[in-house]
Length: 295
Image 1 (cartoon, rainbow, N blue to C red):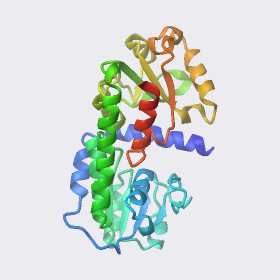
Image 2 (image 1 turned 90 degrees about the horizontal axis):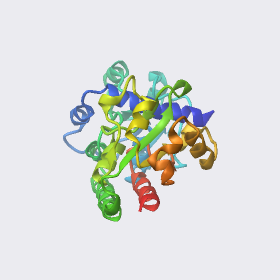
Image 3 (image 1 turned 30 degrees about the horizontal axis):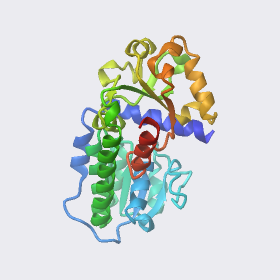
Image 4 (image 1 turned 135 degrees about the vertical axis):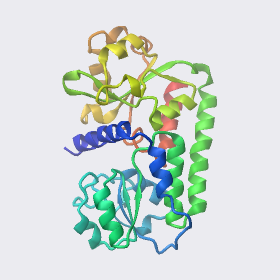
C-alpha cells in the first residue's frame, strides 16, 4: 500500500511541475535575504527537503516531517502530516519557526505566516539550477551555508564526471517512464523540462519527451514507439513491488515494444523511484546508477 502511495506522490509531483509556469520564480520569491540562527526549527512537508536538511547537518532542527519522508531512517515522519492536505492544527503543535511545503497551498501558508512561521515553498524543481536553489534556501534558513555549498558542489562534480564517463553515448535518445496511465492509455514520464530531464541533457542524452508532447501529464504510447528510444529507464514503483526483471518483461510485452531499439540493445533499466524523483542529495546515487548501467 505504501509503495502505491509513493507512486501516486511521484505522479502528483510531475503534474504539479507541469502546471507551474515558472517554478524558479517561486524559489526566488521565498529565498531569505539573511541567514537565521541555528535555533531555526522545521516541519517539512516535502520528502526532498527532509533529505536535504539531514544532508546539510540540520537534521536535529527537523521537529517533524510528512508521512512520505522515509529517508533517512531517523527522519521524524508523522503519519498525521499530509503533504497534499496539511493540517494547520497538527503543524502548530510542533511550534516550528519554519515550514517547508512541497505543494503550494496559499491558504495554509497565510495561516502559518499569521502565526509568525516562515513558509518555504519548494515545489518539484524543473532543473538542476532549481535543485541547487532549494538546497541553498534550506542551508541559509538553517544557518548551514557551508554544508549546503558542499552538497551543491558534490552534485555538480558528479554530473561532470558522469558526463565524461558517458561521452561515447552522447546523442543517444532516452525515455524515462515514471508510471503508466490507466489501462496503458498513456505514460507519465520525466520529460525534458524536469530536473531529471535536465540531468539527461547535461549528460549529452536526448530526451524523446517534452512538455509540449504531454496531454494531461501523459505521453501517448504511439509517440514513444515512433521515437524509438535507444535507452529506456522505468521507475521501480511502477511495478508495485514486483522484481525488476518482471517490470522489464511487462514493458516488453506491450504492443510494438519488442522491436524498440532499447529493447533490442538490452538497454532497459529499472531505477529506484526515490532516487529518480527527489531532487536532493541522493541525485549523486542516481548519477552513479546511470554511469554503472550506461557506460
